[in-house]
Image (cartoon, rainbow, N blue to C red; front, side, top):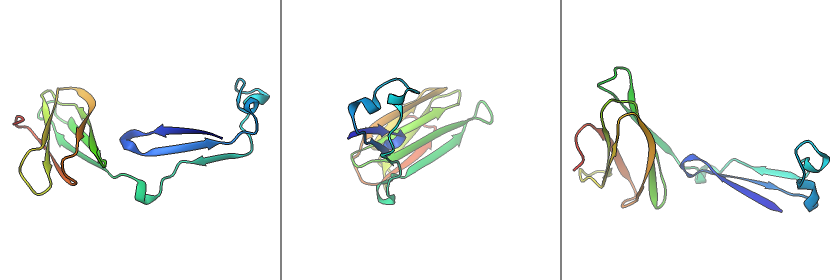
Length: 138
C-alpha cells in the first residue's frame, strides 16, 4: 500500500491512499495499460468536523489608493499561528496580536506596501485577539 499526504493551506490535511496489486500496475506512462488506476482505489479527502481548523479573516480599507484593502487571514494551531496577508495599500500596515481580553501586545507584524506573504508566530496563549492598526509597532 502506498500513501500520499498533501498539506493544504492553514494546516488542513488531506490524504489519498492507492492500493495496487503489483509494482508494475502503478508504473508506466499515463495512458498506457500500466498507468491505469486499479479498481481498488480508496480516497480520503474530508476531515471530521472535530479535526478541521477555523480560519479567521479581517481586512481594513486603505487611505490610498481608494477602494483597495489590507487583507489578513489566520488559523490558530496548537503550537503556532500562521498569518497570511496581502497589503494593497501604498503605506506599511501592521498586524497586532494580543492575548484575548488584554491590551498587552504579544507580537506585531509589519507588512510593506503592495506585499503578499505569510508569517508564523509561536503561541503564547490559547486565545488571541488580532487588530489591524495604522500605528507603529511598540
